[in-house]
Length: 614
Image (cartoon, rainbow, N blue to C red; front, side, top):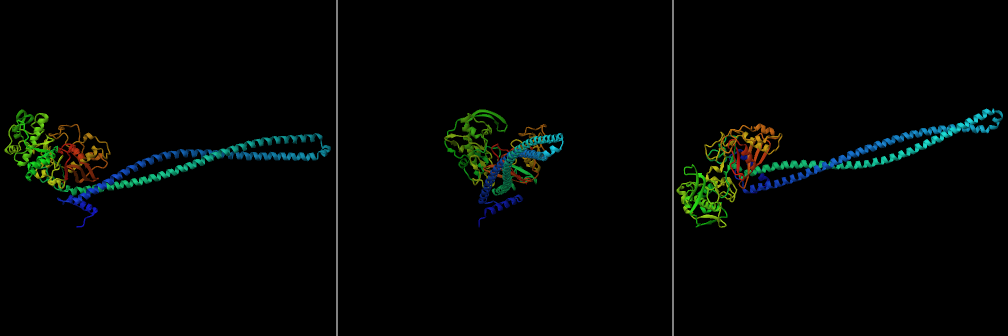
């Protein structure tokens, strides 16, 4: 068969994912397809990271250009002021020069008039001098002398006036020359300012062009980032389907215990299922050991699987006695305080950590682990506590199945570096052990849900919605009138509360002390200590939505990303597009906001759950 190209595989897997949302079953996608998807996601995420890094650089450049532009604008403003002043001064000097020119023209005209008068008088005197003898003989002497001196005096006056006007004219010429020089200097300054302004304006245009280019690049990068983010979300959705998330999301565990399958929920409901209970995930999974034993594995194999690196020792010398001290229960499961020293054999026969009816190989593995753990506690603290903080002991011998396992493993322990150690164990780990990895038939994460040994054991704790007070095991435990499932509205409360708690996309300032379960003060029992409180009023869905600029108003589906025994991410498909919440983030807000005693019942370091929508 011809191998599909990467693009066709992606399209094919996306079609599978979409189909899985509408049908109760989806086929298994080959490992090569998963690898291709993972490679594409990694490549797209690298590209997305690179684009975001470039965008940061562009934003920094834009800020730098804006700062430079602001400085340049200030320089241009100051330059414009100087240009306006220079122009005003030049215009003022031009008006003064024009005024001086008018005065010069007036003086020139006045000077010409005086000179004309002088020429007339001088002409008369000249004529008279030619006719002086005749005038002297025939004219009246007195009149002659008087006329001569009058004209002579007038001529002197006119000569004085000519000198005065000439002086004024010279002063005006000097003043005009001074003004011409000043105007020349001002015009030169104005020309220099014009050149500087032109350079600044050119630089401003250059900066604006660069700014426009950066704006264009930013728009392109934002568009690319949006497209890449959508592409990554689509690829992740396809990967969820390819890894088998659709197998769980389309039916879940079909156990008979209520709260172990989404099929038990009303249409439109959501189920939040813990994978494994409150456990440290260290050492042996007791239910996993049972399933392995039922499948034919012997106790040595079980110990090898669950305690890698340990040395199996036979013939270990057991102590004669052991000190049992602390609070526990008696054979009738009533509280009892212990402070006794008993034989070590009696203690071993009276341990109640695994049902005595189970497969003998699982019981023998438990006996070796319990013996090793007891000897470790004696070595480190001097006594053993008779409850789950150490190991459950009762003041009566256990059934024959357990006693036979103890007898058949007498003197057998596990050591590391020659010393007994804390061989921890718990009922259910959730398909993953801290030192084991995937606790599955294949030993890897391929189709881990269906191949988990704990799931094959039939234990309901492997996949369960915890909604009752206390351990959650008691079918009569307080549930505050709530089922194991959330309504569509209740899930929207949780998702919107996540945005409000982390101040994401707020349009109003919230009162985060009101991020409380809807039944605050009304739910007794369990770990909730708010019963009877009336000091706070929880936010309603409408109030939470009003706090956000883009609230979640509908959820059409949900997907999960898992890895190495942890829920990495929850993806809600909403009216605002895919909403990505980390596994730890969802666990935190769910345990804070879910009504009743609903909770993801796991230790802080353990985040392994599934969210389904029916």
